[in-house]
Length: 299
Image (cartoon, rainbow, N blue to C red; front, side, top):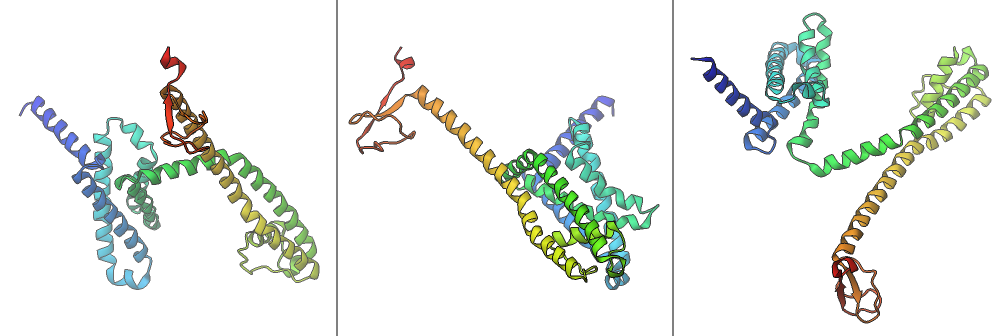
């Protein structure tokens, strides 16, 4: 068989593999992705079961064998994604490409570091592909809008975190002075740790103030914590609302320009011309509307 025939068969193979792997809108592509998601889910469950002593004792051999079978499948899939992609470097350094690589590395690293196999649970990140597989465009759009809201509010959140960090250091230092080593506040970092735990309303209870003044400060930190939790949420929500209003304004502006080109809806009774596109009757007097062409069209 000559080289031309081999190259032709290789190209046909690449095209078919590309359709199956990347063709989320094709039947074979969707079937492949659903099988892939099933294997990812099974793999994550097996990694978790392997850490349970009772299950691992009876099913260790089967779990390891299945884990290697799935790892080999993921490895072949990763290689095929690189081979069939027209821009392989773009895939390799993309979010999905990095996640796919991280998903297969732990099993191979386990040859040198046995504990690394537990990191295979990061394969759960590959379940994010469900948004692409099921073609949930609306979810992807909402996710993109939320990402933009976080990006625009990033500076405000960073300033807020800096402010809270300063407060935690100050209050942690005060608690170290007030409570002292005998009450568990053995150092300033320990006091800062207590302040963070208390302010976030976690309250592990491993350290607790014993003096009256310390308990008074703790009460203040707890009340402050409720306000702290609400601020970042409010910042992101405000940015998200502002962004949605901006989008709505742009859409209305575009619609207004289209209305100007098409002409105005004018009431033949009261001559009011500020109507919504598609309206049939006047919002002021209820009379029938007529379409008045713009001066540009009349010219």
